[in-house]
Length: 454
Image (cartoon, rainbow, N blue to C red; front, side, top):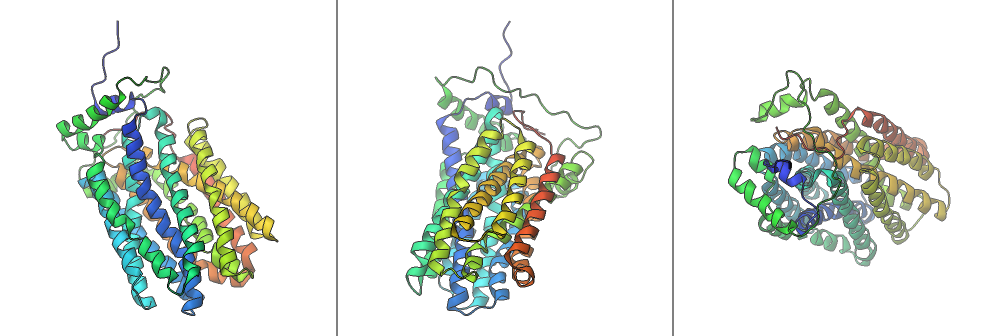
């Protein structure tokens, strides 16, 4: 007697092997992710250059970083709601257009006020793009490798940040207008949005949830056609459906219902823990990495040398992602996330007290390794916390809660540096990492299990 063939979109997607079409979804989304990272990374180098060229006060440079995060907080929250309403691919492409055009326009500014306005619009696009992209990839990935693929998606962040470091090292110091050329390069996402809109499929799970069954079937059939002749894993991970809690609302069909469901009895603990992890990780990451070039300049290194150190430190992100991508399907989501956050806390203390070039580079690389590995695990676990009808909203609002911290963190750096210097600042970052490592154990661990398709 043979098992009945899979009939739902979810069952058909979860039984697939990894195909070229999965690779196309991963790389297509990942390039958008890398362009996002390039923009966020560029601003840290541009801030250091503009601080000298425009004779900016520390508070003014802090606002260049923070105003973008104000936009990101709003963008993440609104973007998730829009993606649950209008589709993952549509909103993903729109976000690329918004922040690409705003970044390109920043190359033409002549003063701080207009730059701040444009950075807000850049933040709107960036904030919406990240949770939507991770939701999109998680919904098309087979259950047994879903976490790994989302961590690999997040690994494109390291590629984009490395590109930003290269531009910061070779382009920005090259001339008085080097920062303008850097912003001009940041307009590339607006063009890439056309590829996303027409070259990638919509999420089949979202289409099924919206009742567009024929379109969902066509998307899955395309994956199944690519899988012809590719062996399915002999021992796939179990893909049992998650139990529904007593009294749980089965489906969220409106914006108000989605927002209420985040704090329903079924989801309130994971929502609270998820928001706390996002808040703490954003605070420490953006507080540290946006300011590293400026902090190194303040410690006596010239601009080019500071940018060179940052480039080397950035390269350690890639092995961090690789380790997290492997461990997340071995240790599970919670353990991987918590251990990488604990490593980030220790590395932050060591970096803040490092003396001499070798120590600065080594501890900075350790911080980069653990911190970005933690980011990969966080983006993998977040979409798994919620059902399909709520998934992008839940991911977006968690990211939005985190962006509040990214607004506060850059503004906290100047007074903390004045009060206790780099050691006190990085101890503060370590405390936030430690809190996040503890909160991670309140999340559900869905390693290898099917997504909730309510």
